[in-house]
Structure formats: structure tokens, C-alpha cells
Length: 494
Image 1: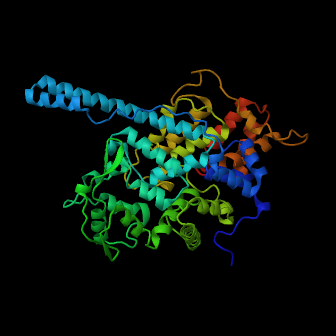
Image 2: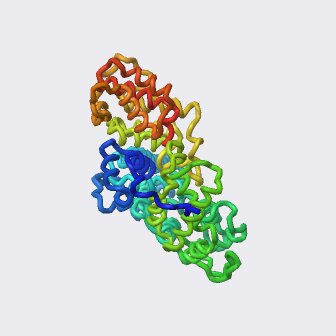
Image 3: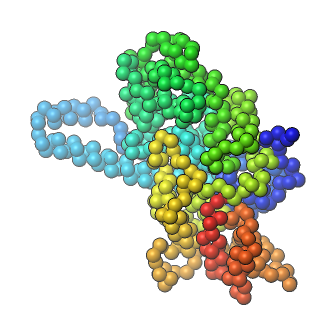
């Protein structure tokens, strides 16, 4: 019986396997990029995708401000005290205006951060690093509305990026309990001896490491909350407040001791599902987003979990094993995952080399489609899968693609604006122009497979070829053809 993660034979790694790898382990690529990965072979392609530190990162530092929501200085605190003593309505109004001005500036910065991150995903030469950063943002979900400090979320975002394929236990989980954004989001700054707040302890086990109801009790949550007391932050940095820490004996998973926060994390990783829960989440993000597990999918997840434990919680070996497996490239794994709004937008730009146009508008479109960066709907993150699709989001998805392809605003008239500002005929320029060949059919066939990841039925393929028949395969014709293909239901999948 073959192993669940039996490696793909190198001879079986061709153009469309490289295409699949680029879509799932990133956000797609141009025909030239797919061909480059094909020529590397399976081992070379996976190594290139995973070892991104060897690739320069050209996206510049945006220069975001860290001091918008800073604590008051001593002089400002003294001024506020004088205001309160004076009982002056004008003074109180001035204090309110200063606070509101900072909040407006911070909201502007988080909006700029959404556009910046979208730009980074579109332009990066390290797509898997950004794809994993997006995964961790949904896994350790933290939202701006509760945090109300854009710099804290940007710091968290960079922590995810720096440790994207690093050590799950030692850097990501031990790191997240020290993260100011997460501490504020789950109220651990209010967790103190004698008045424990259970939010972080609960989500740490339920959502981040073990899975809901898997190997822990309500008593473990209460005792874990006591272990986390005193973990807080001051301004932009984590700090441990020893006066608020409960240093009495705690019993967690049946083991008693004077456990602190780091001890709590280490105890969590003695539980059986500490390796399989995160692997199930990774499997749904990269391989198959079906809500229900099967015997085959769980065999793969369990194999991933064994590798994660054997490799001391390092994630890179797990991802390498998955991206080289027959299971990952099996035909039933292709063209069957629903694209998230971010995947839809970024993949369209990267695979067709489309201009990003107005990044703020694209970030807003992602919000309308259900995925607002830095603002997941809850600590559970986004459900994903078929939850991305409904009548409202489908309409916005199609309008967004038309905007990316043509620059035409939703609701505009054909005579509004100028002509096409880019030439999509380059996507079929590599197809040989051989006498007696049906070039429109060749173009429709290639574009269908390239954009959909799978082949459509022959009737639809014939209709798309008919659109191009009798025309030059110029920018206008190819753009019309792509607009039709991207309107197909299958384009919502990757």
C-alpha cells in the first residue's frame, strides 16, 4: 500500500504540475514563470518555492508610523490632570478632539496597510512567504476593531512573515502569547491574579493548537488562564507584570506545578492533537478546502503530523513533503478549491501580469467579497471554502475581474475611458502558428487550462473558440476571450 504522502515521480512533474504548484503554494504565475519552474524539475521547483530567503525581496519599507496611538507623555498627562481639575468643558473638548484625531489617523494607516499588503502579495518574489503570512493571519486571527492600533497589527503581520515556515511551537505559538495585538484582542492585558480572563487560554487550545474539544477540559482552560496572568504589553512591546501573575500551583492536563505561560504552551504540545490540528488547517488551506474529512485526507493529515513531531515542530519539512507528494498533484486535487477574495485578485494580477490599478479600491473589493485584511470576522478567522461564494460576492467577483482586465468601472458605459492599457495577447504568443492548425481553438484551449486549472467541456470550449474565429488574436480579442473564461464558475476555483 502506498504511503499517504508518496512522492511524485520526477518524470511526472510537467508544465501543468508546475502551474498547480504556483497556484497553491503562491498566487499563480505567468506562462513564463510556469515554464521556468517546469524546467527546474520537482525537487528544484519545490526548493525554489520554499527557500525564499535566497530570493531578494524588492518590496520597499512603507514607512508606517508607530507613534500614532502612543501613550501620553508625562507633560501630556500633567496637562490632562490640569484639564480635569479645571472642570472646563473647552479643555475636555480639546482632549476629545486630540484623541479623535489620532484615531482618524490610525484608521487611515490601517487602510493604507491593507493596500500595501495587497501590493506586496502582487509584487513579491516570495509568494509562498506571503501566502503563509495570510494563512497565519487567518489562523491567529486578530482584528483591528478590537485592537485599535494599526502598528500592533503591522508588527504581528511582520512576525508571521518572519516565521512563516519556521517553528510552529517555539516561534509562532510561544510568540503569539507575547504579541501585543493578540494580548489586546483577547483581553489578556486584563488577566490578573484573583480575576483571571480566560479568552487567550481558551482560544490558544480551541482554535490555535488542539481544536475545539480535543483533549482539554473547562478546568484546563481556567488553570491555563491563571498560567497566563501577567502577560501584557506596554506601548508597542510585550512585558511581564509579575505583580499580576498567579504563582500558586495549577493543575493542567492532570499535571500539577507552579506553571507559567511558557509551561502552559509546553504542556499543550504534549497532547496528541497538537500536531494534527494545525496540519488539518494547513491541508485545508493548501490541498483541499472541504469541511468534511475523509479516510484519505485524514491519512495525509496524520502523516503530516508525524513529520511535524519528528522534525521538532518545524513547518518547512511538512510543506516540502506535501508539495512533492502524489496526493497534492492528483487530478482530484486540481481546480477544486474556492479562491479566497485575496487569492482571486492577486492571482489574476500575477498570472496575467495585469496592472493592479487602484490598490485601495481592490482592498475594498476584497472587503465586499468577505475578506477584509486586518479585520477577520472573529477569532475563528475566515471559514473559507464555499463560504466565500454567494449571490452578492459572486457579482462583486466578476465586476472586479472586469475592472482588472479593462480598467472599466462597474456600471460604466463602453464609451467611458480609453482603450486597453495592456496587451493580453502575450499570453498566447508562445503558441506555434502552424499551417492547417486551428489557432482560435488552440488559444481557447490553452487559456482555458491556464486560467481554470482544468479543461472545460468540449461544448463550452467550442463556444469560446468561436468568439475568436475569424479575428486576429490581438489584445482586444484575447481580452474578450479571457473575460468570458473568467466569468465561468470554474474560474472561482484553483
